[in-house]
Image 1 (cartoon, rainbow, N blue to C red):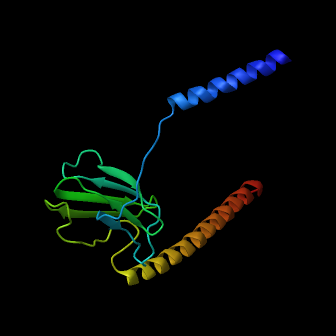
Image 2 (cartoon, helix red, strand yellow):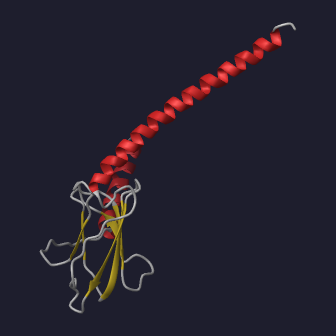
Image 3 (cartoon, rainbow, N blue to C red):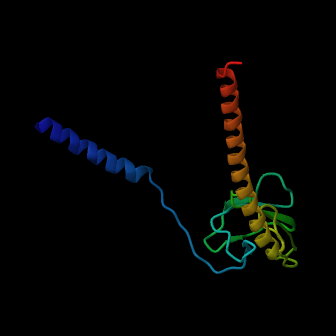
Length: 168
């Protein structure tokens, strides 16, 4: 019993020593600086919260930076070269927004821009209301059409069975 207690004490001491030897510190800071802000919203004004975002630099190969928007649909990044940058916001449910901007030699935006994206959102918000109505009516007709087709199939099957059992 004493041997087990001694072994546990030595093992614990070794783990504490090893942890302090191999660990490393971290540093960070919070600073108010000027970066490039991306803000993404749905057509009705609701922010695109926690959507995936990819930032592509002018060279355009691999993404310069990837991440997620915050709950307000915003993402901040710091470009490191001048040229035409591309930002792709994708919420994973069919909404995709592609923004392009030009960064000048002082690493600031030459001009701000606003674009509408592809997917389920449309440029005209009144169209969205009509689209919902059309989709709703289509679903109703689809359900009743399927039920009617099934009922006709069942009736035809029953008539075929009656003809087979009825003597001629």
